[in-house]
Image (tube, rainbow, N blue to C red; front, side, top):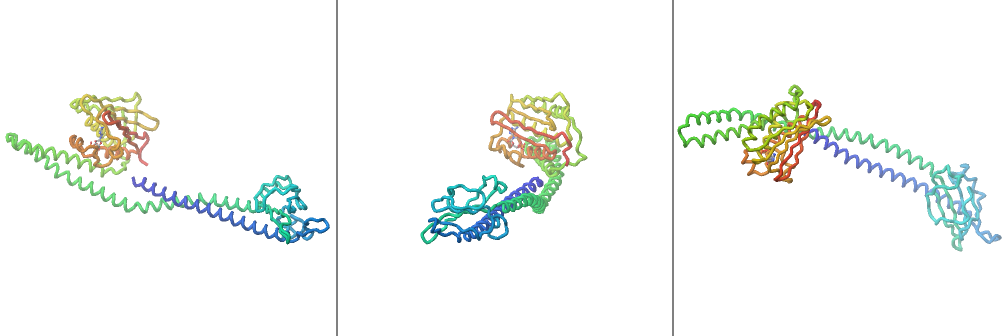
Length: 427
Ligand code: ADP
């Protein structure tokens, strides 16, 4: 129970902190991408503006021209202006190509003014996976003179971003591991006071139940002696019989509480024995034959042909089967049937108790394993139950690292299925 709560706490802590971390890493990456793009765009615009300063109107040719003689050889890296420029293209105002440096461009301008990120199709540029291109309208006194198109490679930026991505991809799982470990340690610390107070409560219940047993057995013995002594006095019989019944019922309750408090989910390794379930269950069923016959219920047992062996505490396991069979007989009316089946599964032994009794409403099913929960107080009181039987069953099954499931239809009956591991249930 505590380990499960601790695991849940640690899981939720890791999940929430992990989500924040992943979100944070994503935001950092996006900010870096944005920063780099803005820096590249600014530099590209500055360089394009410098080049645009050499655009003039050629009176002899009656068209705009660009003087690039002062612009050093592109891509040579010998001048800061030419560094990292892949091509420069000058288009006139009609969008027709006038002059260019770099690879041969389209004759007609085919991109709108502004920035574009493009994948070059020209084989000469294919070693650059991505280019950032600007198409800048250049204006003169008479209006727009033409369009200057300049491109720079994004390879360097791409590599840097990929490195950042790789660093984040490695750092996030490592950080998640640390977060998980911290969560596990923190949840352990958080669970400590709860565990302590639960243990105190268990100890108190165990001590109180233990202390109550002696006075209860004294009451029972005295009442029984009183019954014998007063056998001739008819008026004393009913109250004395009441005392005997109440003392027996309280004794059963105290024993159940003691059982719940003493086995809070752990089994002592020395109490475990290798048990062959086939004869073990047959013996319990034989004990119940008389009770079933008195109630007019047909009780049957279906063992498999092969022997099924598990490691279990025989006394506790007996309590599980007895509680389930007792409930099945109790809540099945005359003429009905109760069937116990043992089904071997790979790694598991499955024990099924099926009855054709009154069944359990669907709304009550999630709670029937809770302590002191009774489906219908009237019918449970009739049958003298305290609502502890199934809580004990579940606790014992879980202590054996097993599971219990129930299916039921009101008016048709119920099936309780216990699944127990074949291997040693202590970890
Ligand atoms: P109780 O001692 O009251 O029987 P349990 O913990 O054994 O307490 O069972 C809890 C409740 O589940 C019971 O009050 C009963 O209403 C219901 N219940 C348990 N087993 C059966 C069954 N086989 N058929 C119908 N109802 C059942």
